[in-house]
Length: 119
Ligand code: FES
Image (cartoon, rainbow, N blue to C red; front, side):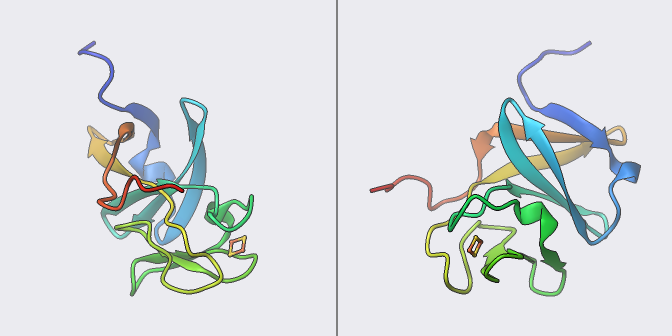
C-alpha cells in the first residue's frame, strides 16, 4: 500500500464503456467519469443549471463535451465551462488518471482555471 490521499480508485478502466459517462460518488461528491478512447475525464456530475445528473446525458466525443439531458447545455470535459445555454456556470473538473488498470479520481485537485468567483 502506498500513501493515501492522491485520489480514489473508482473502478477498473476496462469497466468503463468507451464514449460514455459513468457516475461515481467520491468523498460524497458526485463525479461523472468519461472515457473517450483511451482518454479519461472527470467532471462534477451535477449540472450547474439544476440538480440533474450529467452522466445520464450524452457524451459528445468530437467536441469533448457532455450534454445535459434536461435542457441541453453542453459542458466542456476539459474546463467544465458550459458551451451552450441555459447553463451559465461551470461545473468542476477533476484530475483523473489510470494507474495499473484502475481509474483514480483526485477530487482534491480541481483543474478548472475558472475556479473561484462564486457570487
Ligand atoms: S438542468 Fe442541465 S441544462 Fe438545465
